Length: 155
Image (cartoon, rainbow, N blue to C red; front, side, top):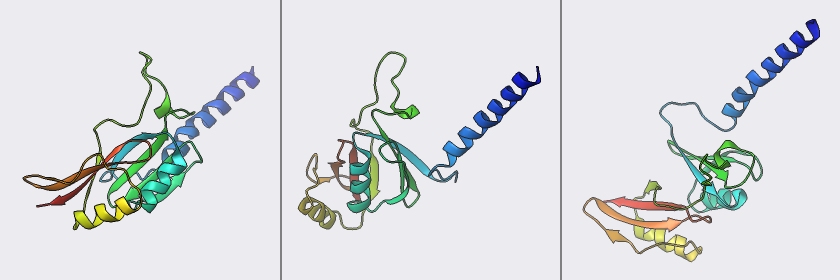
């Protein structure tokens, strides 16, 4: 009788500690930090893109299954479209997470034209040309999986 009780207690202790470890993996618990999750096709390619092209810092990476990156007060969580993590699991109606769409990170820049010129030379794909708006100028580019990023220079 004590054996099953001991086993159950041990399982509860182990199970109780798993979320804490997962929660701390690359995730800063600062309530002022803004977090975004992007679904990507290739974690290493996305990490290289955000690090090398847009100046994000790698906070943590778990091979092909997850990466946490930061830039200023934004943390970007990258998850694959297929894998063991919760973010890649299909919804009850069968829909699967995919990259793309129109929701996006907005990065403010002091010199939009210079940054666009630099990124174009590096082969970055832009969805459009610079749009001049009432509040400033902006342009949309795609990460390697097709997630949009807006570069914005206030007017």
